[in-house]
Image (cartoon, rainbow, N blue to C red):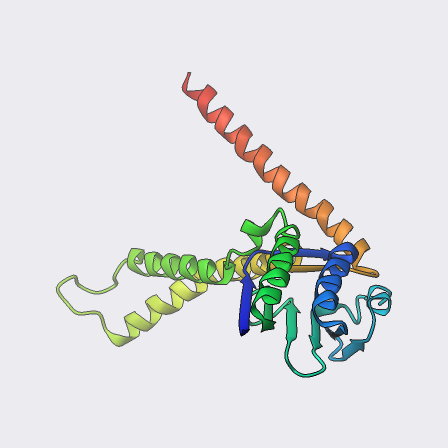
Length: 237
């Protein structure tokens, strides 16, 4: 019986040469002929017909890989696999499989096991949407500042349009530094806690450097938080 199965992975993923090799083998065992398409930040889409060429991709900063798509189709169109790693507008990893039920179950479980082992240790941080959180914080702060601004008119008199405009303008002006700070935090979050890290070519060195920054930030935060908690406890005694 022919079936179609899909699987989505929402965790942040670190995929290296060993991980790509395993996924390539899973699909090759199912299809027998695997190809890859790599979308890069220079706007080009590079195609690879074999695993060695894919693993040998230089992956420079100028042409860094954004997404990798592994795919294969049966000779009689009776089976197919499409696996997208690094989707920008969806889940980090998505796979679609078509074929005989028993064969689909086997390859699906293999892919699930392999991808689960690629979960990044910082996944809970990477999957937080700082843009939404930042927007809510900024909106609340602007509202508080607007309400705290003293009225220049008599309390019994309704606020004039000019006063309302001045209040909103003052609140927005006061919130500008906060907005700039949140934008900076969001960019740093996307840069150092990416949803997908592709460790081929020069990407391996970039990951090692970023990993040092991540550990410095995380450990520094934990140490600072611990020190603050200890100080608070000691100050009460």
